[in-house]
Length: 215
Ligand SMILES: Cc1cc2nc3c(=O)[nH]c(=O)nc-3n(C[C@H](O)[C@H](O)[C@H](O)COP(=O)(O)O)c2cc1C
Image (cartoon, rainbow, N blue to C red; front, side):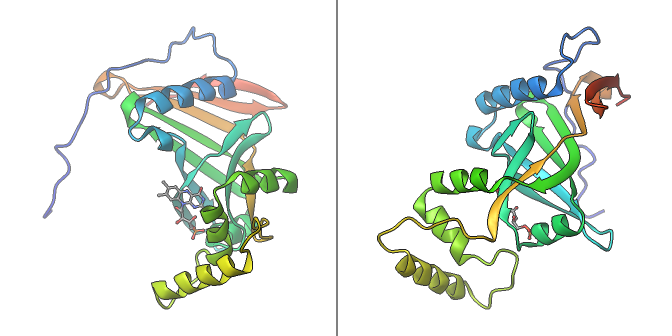
């Protein structure tokens, strides 16, 4: 092997997940971990970044980093272009998995479930709250489509900047939110000597059931 990473290892010692932990609601626990991550991670503004995996109609998996923009009992919300590759994959196969990794806390959270488009009003509200430059970017970028040159993107941006001069750009129809409705949420806490803690919550008939998994 020209480059070996085999010697890179870290012993995880910071926290643990106890069997008698009172937490039986994974959304509450997720909120606590996210809050802690915001205080711990560098840069803290990206503690809400996660890898989102989708599977296309041929059964091929695709994964990319996105930002979680909110979560509630309705689900986990993220935003993007409905005509992008991920948009097409979610249209063909509306299931996804998201993974958060917070190295400063030695933690991972995995969330899995069906995905639906967010309500239009929610997408409008979020779009309206974005900086104007991001709003114009959503109009200018045909996300995941080939571009001949960067100048093509810049000229599209000039075009939409002129089009919406003096007014707030409305949300494009091809841009908006998605909501992943969790059916499984797994919390992983690194522990010494690879004896990590894993608590797996699964939704059965509207109730969360918690199981400890071997690391
Ligand atoms: C830190 C970070 C945050 C990102 N946040 C988003 C996001 O919230 N929405 C989005 O559509 N793309 C986001 N991206 C870009 C995506 O990773 C990806 O390039 C884009 O969504 C196109 O993916 P697709 O071709 O699979 O649809 C982010 C990338 C990084 C590195």
